[in-house]
Length: 101
Image (tube, rainbow, N blue to C red):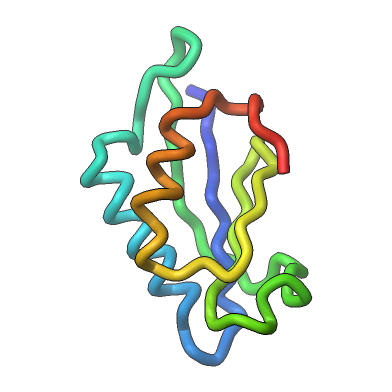
């Protein structure tokens, strides 16, 4: 089964990365898209935290966390937990590998 992974940076003092990851997991479940059909195959989406995505220059002015979607190579910067629903909706509407940066 193909997988899509969302890596959320937790290398901030405020703990916002953990909050973003929790909100994304909650939205995956609420929207029923943790496992979905894409191009005739089941696609499983996982949310993972990581210590650094080397995107600080894009987030340092705001209080949010960096996020990258693999294998799609989609980057989100300065993400707040309240944006989780919109991010999951956008990913559910796109096909894996079809969207780029």
